[in-house]
Image (tube, rainbow, N blue to C red):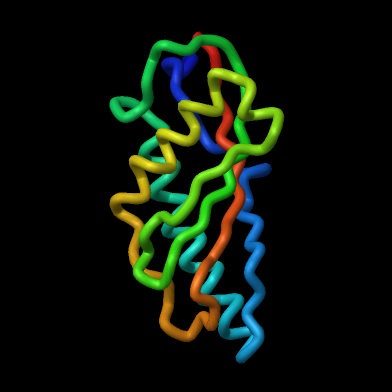
Length: 127
């Protein structure tokens, strides 16, 4: 049975790239960062499915979104890679991240950086 048209983050290729590296306790900080990434990823995935997703675009495509959060979990910046910015999927991917960011929790206290940056591809499947 074919699933209805919706945007999904491809799990195999949507592993968060965490740009900010922790330097205090690398193993523990990596574990905390991994858990935090999973929470953010889940929120983005949830908001990339109906009824949250906008249906005006059709076809298949992918947009790569880079976003940053502060120590309170507030979204600071959302950017698209240069290829995604020129497609209708880019605007929708940006909207998905912004909508999901309302529910982003604060990162773990033991992560040393003031700004955490993540990169995630969001794939769109056609009708």
